[in-house]
Image (tube, rainbow, N blue to C red; front, top):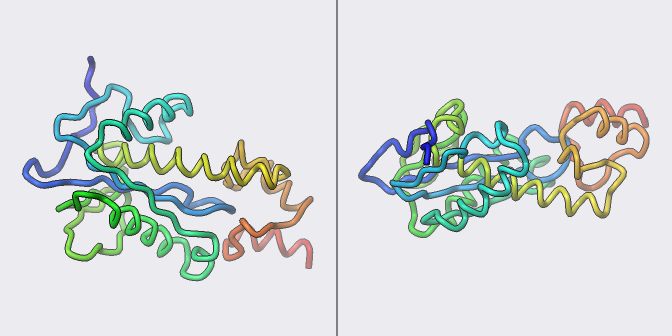
Length: 203
């Protein structure tokens, strides 16, 4: 089997977790984070940043990651929390909630991106493009993306007018057109600039 080009870990002697989030740039729905501890010898030829994978591949990898990881967990922050504390802090909150559920607790965190609010008593390293560099972060990106997509598909059933089964809450043309036609709902983030511009059309 051809191994992924991603690195397996930063520290060979520590319990290490990769952490990533999905949905930070959306107009609707929660922000969802995942934390994953992989075995040190874990490899998969197709594991990569979830944005580089097809939906079919992500769904296949989710099953493998959840089955073969030492531990994995999902955390989320709601639309109300996003609007109250802002999306950056809500992303950190979702990540912390995922980390807190891991058993065993990690000794080091690999965080995708360039900013993070320190988790109590655990060292971390923030890595720009980390989901394309480290297997554990890539695994977290796959779980965060697939779990959030599942939530948006459930929300779509009660609000089909926004086509969340296709845009997952992102500000696509289809989604923006639906906002103009139908207005916003309780699952939209009222604090987002683009959404506020849409809402201004109704004032």
